[in-house]
Image (cartoon, rainbow, N blue to C red; front, top):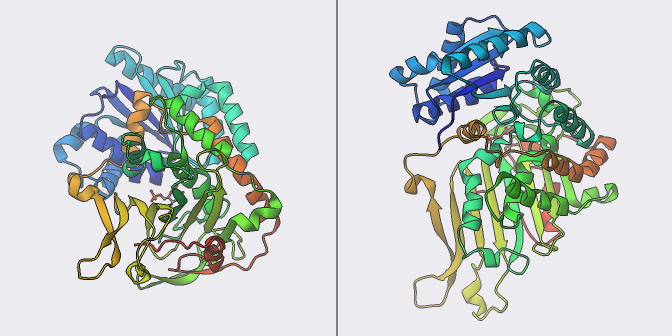
Length: 495
Ligand code: BG6
């Protein structure tokens, strides 16, 4: 399904996200003819820039970051003509009246109302003001055609998220609001639903009777880079767990949806969030571990500690690592632990979900045959490797009975050598199509905050822990090993 004629207005158009992700994604959608020839991008930013200057800045971004490599000159030439820049003060009404003029002029030229997408690609402190002005100026009049897209962070805690949701609902309908969680656009993340709900083979095993526990790891080698001033107010729990990791958990744990209707899928996900066991403040240390990286080595290069990073307070107690044990109190998952961990400056850049199955009920083999025995595991590789690995036991060839774990592998590279779209391609096309399945609904965002609030409160009330507690290039603090070891498990080594 191709997108209808669309005008995308990007607020914060000179920023990094537009340059690295949004416009390269739009270019690829254009290249693959997913968008209508009647298409325009209006970049709005505070810097002085001409249309030409803006276009060449974006071309540089496409050349550097597009998954299809450098822009094809003949495609770029046409695509560039769809891009405009407007310097603007976000608090001036004139910004919005002139946007309105520009939008209606294009609509008149194209012969009627088109999709209008307003993309908030700027820090949260500007978002409310701009959204108000967009609403008040009547820029998004039609709830079927006008949509507004928000990047995270969506609120700083439960209370602020609720306030923001309530406020936006005074200006727009929920169906117009698209809250991005870019993990949901990743090919391998979308494939979790395909894997679970398009195959009859695994679903009977997908419950407390056969699954021992689940591990979700999103580890990054990157530090905070130049985002210190944002990150130091956020931390790993707000930056990654509240959104990306809890969404992965929802996809693994949700009940099968009756259809792929946006609300049906999101209802099933929010059911999981509601079933997450609430932890009291006193129990936080049994369920959650935080960490902060110190100096260390990544791939043979010395890197500074978090507190030495630009924009970070020298005595900062912000978490750059977080690990949790969650329980989902429902029939399917009663008492099955879900272990989640994420961190910056870890040994590997890898996102992986491991489903560990229970052992066989009775081991018939003599003990020497089972020396290498390992539990059955289903390993969903999200990135950078993309694939699914099923680990089971086989007989090692030889005259003795010797069990050995082997893998059955589905690998994207081999099966689909032409590659996969970037998350932002999928998500931007969905916005243009008006399909909100992969976006966060207000109640999902709030339910995710709700479960994390006792942990945030506890951590913020007791900031005086001895950070840094892991060196860059390690797998997080020792307490994270202890969290899982208490249950007789260990974090499965990153491949
Ligand atoms: C973002 C976080 O949402 O996700 C970043 O703000 C993090 O801190 C990034 O680095 C990770 O995304 P990806 O797609 O590189 O795994």
